[in-house]
Length: 195
Image (cartoon, rainbow, N blue to C red; front, side, top):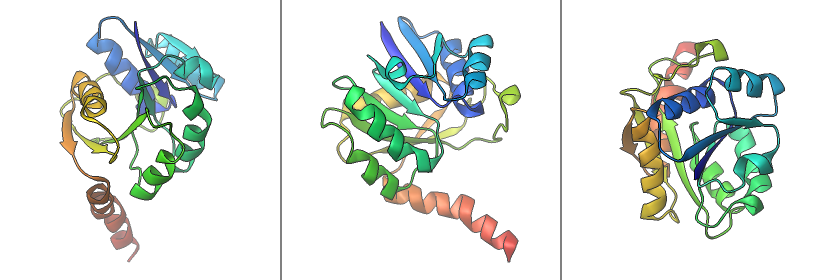
């Protein structure tokens, strides 16, 4: 049986679990991790995950795909923690606007057989809490796929498969393009409003 681990059960991570469960991927277990007991309990209650845990090793043990739904400042520390636990050939992706600097730092803490393929769904509306989690959140949205230089075709295919299974459209960017894109669509409007 394949295993997908979602680390971070906020509204986006929980929505991803719900969408993956809705896709009914055969012989695949969805495991959710969060430090917050309530988040794990809520994700389990709404059937967003098959199993929930507050222990990294239980979440990532044997996982082929690990999805990080964490703030950018937690990604490197999380990868440092889980890196030694990952099985050969596993793939890590995320759901945030991870910068290329964060990506490079994260890659320093991965074993050579583990791949990082950045991900960033360009959501039409961002849910603010678990009550807004939805199995349709990713339908028909562009989902940035940002392969690291060391990510092979198989790793990219795994992430693209996840993106397509939740109804999103893969949108390929390299890390530098993604940084510029994020600055243009997120940072610049905020700066303009302050001006």
